[in-house]
Amino acid sequence: MNKKANIYVDYDEKIGNADNRLFSSFVEHMGRAVYGGIYDPQNALSDENGFRTDVAEYIRELNVKYVRYPGGNFVSGYDWKNGIGKKEDRPLLPDLAWSLMEPNEIGVDEFFAWAEKLGLEPIMAVNLGTGTPQSAFELIQYCNGTQGYWADLRRKNGREKPYGVKYWCLGNEMDGEWQICARTAENYAQIAKMTAKMLKDYDPTIKLIFCGSSSSDMKTFPEWEKTVLYQCYDYVDLVSSHKYFSYDKKSEQAKNEFFGSSNGFDKNIEYLTEIIDEVHKKRLKDFPETKKRNIGIALDEWNIWYYHEGSDLDKVWVVGAAREENVYTARDAVVFASLINSILNHCDSIEIACYAQLVNVIAPILTQTGGKAIKQTIFYPLKYAANNLSGDVYKCKTDCDDFKAGKYGKVPSLSVSFVKNENKAYFWVCNLSEETIDASFIAEENIFFNKAVFMTESDEVNSFENPFNVLPSEAEVKDNKLTLLPRTWYFIEGEVK
Ligand code: AHR
Image (spheres, rainbow, N blue to C red):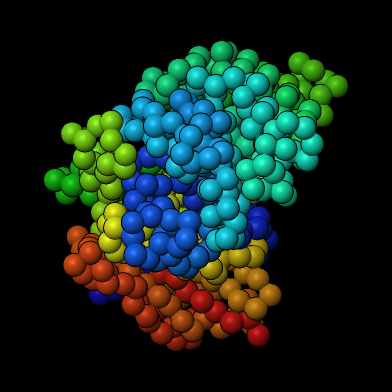
């Protein structure tokens, strides 16, 4: 017998607003993300600038708002000045982050021109590993300036209008021992604050993203956040948070736990929000004249990541060898979809979320250098989310059962969110349990749910030989009721009459 569950919208609890800034992405100079991914001059499908039109088309389908660039770990050893000007003068240099060579064929101007063509807004990361506040200051002059040497140099390099970059990341994962020139919290707070002051004095319209701990599993968490946010308080707009999930594919138990990932994600986000509140209180107590700032979360790296899967680690000090080219199953897509619920249900504190990454490196799009491009399983939940889930997000309640998810404990079988705008309303639902559930959707009377798109977990993947092996299916919602298959993601659409 099927289980039964009601899913209610709680109209008294509006969480916030959603739009495609929550489905932003990330392109790092890493592996084949840039070289062989978005850029592949030898490919017959590339445009006059060497950028792949097939990949561009897939990215357009994902309706990406912001794209973080150029790293990632890469940025901590990167000198942006090597990537501007005449291509033939640009140096080929080792990148210590990924043991590859960086030809500097793509730099700020090429990347920004590409992004603009696709309607993406770059989030620029500055190097606070080997870099200096001065180099970051020169970069913002180059990107956003109208006068002076750096703005003139940009003009000379072919770009008249300033790029007007709004979001700036002050370094990347600076607490991680793997980071080029990692720092202590005090040390990072000092350089980040100096850089922040220079950037904001120059362009007060920008928003600054300070590094949080690389992950909530780090020993530095949450003391790092407390130190950095407290010391840099007057400059912080956002604090970054990174989170990746995976499981041991040989273990059934681990697989079960994997389906509880969104519960862990929720807790991480809520804990970080508490830490931010704690810092507000301490600052306002210690400095009563302080004006309370609005500090949000930039969840600027999140995904499922099987470390070193799809990596050609024997190939070092070459351009564009494979790094972290994970191939995602339908199971990954279901868990990935449940992580989208965590983001939507915390959109009051998350200002931006970037899934990491966009092409080849732990990405929804995979390419062959010189060959084809395919859409991975996780492409589909992203596509439906980014193109539809915009509007007011309300809390949902359900009377569903729980299932046992290892370290996450007992987790509700249904992970749910609800978004509504003038014309449409959506439930985003994942049945994480092994049970079939007859669900009733209870929202305002003038909303009529009719269409559902779904994908059920399995080991199946899309490949270059079989690119459409895993595709979402369609179901009909009748009288606001739908039978939810075990371990399945659903996008449910309704008309607001
Ligand atoms: O997204 C891949 C890597 O993961 C990034 O370079 C780094 O910031 C994180 O550890």
